[in-house]
Amino acid sequence: MRFRGLDLNLLGAFYVLMQERSVSGAARKLNLSQPAMSAALARLRDFFGDELLVMQGKRMFPTAFAERLVPQVQALLGGVESMLTNRSHFDPATAQRTFRLIASDYVIAALIVPVIEYISRVAPGIRLELAVPSERGEAEIAEGKADLLISPDYYVTGEHPTELLFEESHVVVGWGENPLLQAELSLEQFLAAGHVGVRIGTQRQAAFADRQMSITSHRRNIEVETHSFLTIPLLLLGTQRLALMQERLARRMCMIHPLRFQPLPFPFPAMREMMQYHATRQTDEGLNWLKALLLREAERS
Image (cartoon, one colour):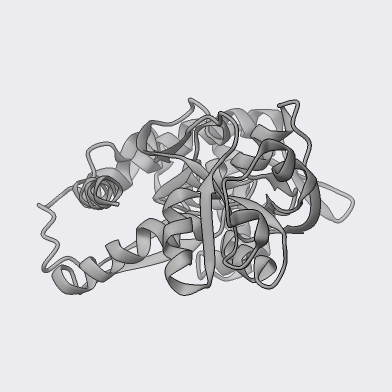
């Protein structure tokens, strides 16, 4: 289909070229031959009167014009995708669809696992892909690579809609036989103990609790740092170490491992866990159904 002389299929090719910054990479992603992809780039250059991608050394880089064009094309393609997704009523019992969620292993264990169990009973054609958080979480939402990002509020921006999923308290957790947890823990004992900390992603971003501790006057002795919330219990067992843990996760982990937890011996803010999605998906019946399931489970737990 053409619009004002432009083959609209070329917009999809343009967007993938901007993502891959490689003719051969874009060709592979679109299942085209490299000559066909090169021809598409040539037609785009001719239509827009701009090189769009230029070679510098062994890499290709977008021109300033191409970078300005990307968000406009992205919004257009997102609107088309939303239109196609919503062309018929979403029926969970018969729908065949895959949702890609970006969420920490804590959110998966505490919230998503029960939702998956429910989905398997009422919506057998629904498939979930779970991806670990990274610095590109919001970019993946913007690029349509993920349907939903679940993250503490300070890790999301206002570029796309967000909804509060739940608020979470933190507790101090340790091995069930840790002498420090046999009676009420004092602040002095808490600070003197060895601790397990959490940093996430390739840039080692501090988890919510670790970030909050870093801006207080309380300084912990971090003996071990891990990338995964679910490894915390293994790093506590048989030791006198302590860790800050989300209360939902602590309750689940205490059913699996010989752990115990207590309230923190000082005031600590609640964590606001948010859901973020692309602006074009606000009327997506399937995504709204999934969000409702997550909200219901959050209220129940």
